[in-house]
Length: 246
Ligand SMILES: CSCCC(=O)C(=O)COP(=O)(O)O
Ligand SMILES: [Mg+2]
Image 1: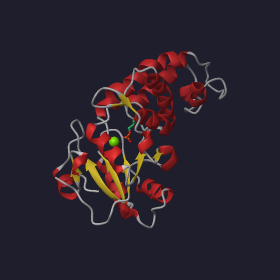
Image 2: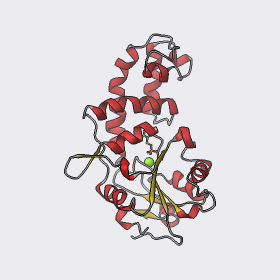
Image 3: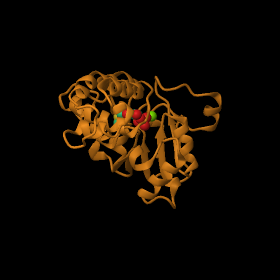
Image 4: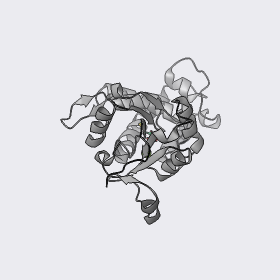
């Protein structure tokens, strides 16, 4: 069903996982890729991990809690548990971004951004600003959009269509409406929040954006969490970006 808006939309902010690419890409490709490389990365460190100067991995790992940094086994167990429980921890997100960089650069990883999302982003950027807000680190976001697998299987770079990126270190957690207020301030729309549209698969994120005064729509793609009867009654929902009338 087409979704239109009472006020003109001037800016669009996109979530990543479950919105522009399948949840399965993050859960069954990106997270396992990181876990596969983790033992080798951690085995190169000196324990307890303290120094912040020898390598990027060491610098990141020195920010994990002290108990976790005492030994290889502790750190492996701690980081694995963060990943398996999908904890949106800023240090983990920075670590994941670093490891995924290797995968994107050596061609082992390509991002399966939905065809309708590619079309939407490349078409819309001519008239509106498009930003990203994801729990994944900004570095990981730029990598993902820089290595998108298009319909022909080629790698395309969508970063040229994007005006900026936000993550939990710049703007806070995605379930908090204060995070959306902070983004509105940053993009100069705090006095005109209804000119901004946030798109996400996650109901709590959509609710938080609406509370901050933005327009917000649920993107419901195959594999996303089921929507309740109440969600369907109270929220605007699209299954394809073609249904957005902006
Ligand atoms: C930037 S790709 C990795 C996505 C990720 O790590 C994640 O936690 C997904 O969060 P999102 O806010 O995009 O749903
Ligand atoms: Mg999401």
